[in-house]
Amino acid sequence: MRKLNITLSTDKFLNMLYCSNPSCSNPFNPDDNKFCIKCGQTLTLLFRNRFRIIRLLGEGGFSRTYEARDADRIDEPCVIKQFVPQVQGTNVLEKAT
Ligand SMILES: [Zn+2]
Image 1 (tube, helix red, strand yellow):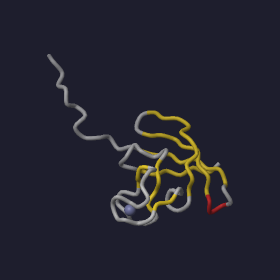
Image 2: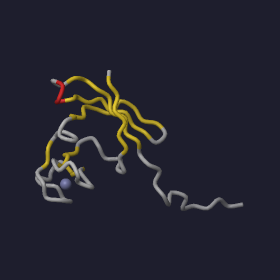
Image 3: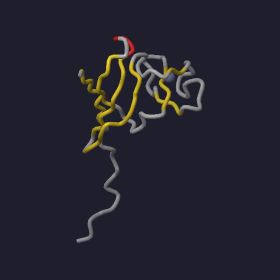
Image 4: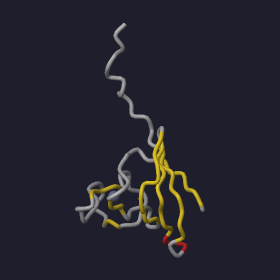
């Protein structure tokens, strides 16, 4: 099964609609939206106009793995690995010494 590595700055992926504008800086929209909140383009169920996210397979560390279908290849099953960059400012609590 093919694997795709995609780096996303959001932890949202499932139950989302995706902007049809390939250069949109924020292609993720809540699924009750009709148009992209960022650029106003129509939304599609296919991530990058191509992949349909089926379910979360697993997560660990800074990555999550999703089962997906590649619509460009007659819904061939594939796996998308999402890297979630470490969010800055998580060390809010200082260690008491
Ligand atoms: Zn957009």
